[in-house]
Length: 332
Image (cartoon, rainbow, N blue to C red; front, side, top):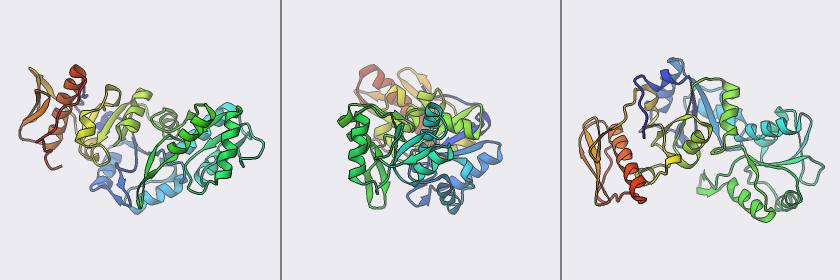
């Protein structure tokens, strides 16, 4: 189920589309080793694009944050769900179309960059675009909800239910989308992952014939790559841990798996089936009476790959995730 590559991924794929939080940084700090890994991938000829479902920050703010963390980045390297939403609207309604902008400055800037005219919730418009903003007033939300119910076309930047705030995991734009959807009985066109417009927009802006999606979330990054027909690399520096990995349904399984962004710099070998077990690099993973069993020693990356294959084979056969009692992942 995992793929193999005889060469380093940075030589096989000419574009890495990198999710940010949990991949390049966590909170306000760079993931250990990430700036160096990315610099080496770029030196090998790989283009880097930093993509985010966050619709509130303009690309230059994102690029400045990355540079502060030691990651080389310009605004043209950053692609947001606001930009993807603006592209959808411009393609459908044309330049100079008036669009209700229910979101932060990043959404308004993206609309203006496509030649669209952002307007208020009560103004004449041909469509509405929504994105995350803590400053949107309830009166604007109510007016937008009624207009969507009455037929105004709607594009949502993303449907993320949560986002990491300074005070903990907080409600994301997806909570507002869900409320509007239930009230209006309307499904929006979605620009961000796991829908494919953000990935399509990234390739259009940055270029690349053999893109690779790199992320830490199965339900957005990896599923988004699957929806776009692209290869993907799952890194384990963010929200996906062992319980999430072994329970991944087929559509959320990555092409490649690595502990961190160092996975861009190496070749990848898939585990080999050995009876009902899977072996790789000194590790052997199997399932006994529903419980995961791992023996051997070797590279921690190979441990994760062998475990993933064994767990997914069991899940597909039994319909139940493996039991993890007593299983401890090696230090990354």
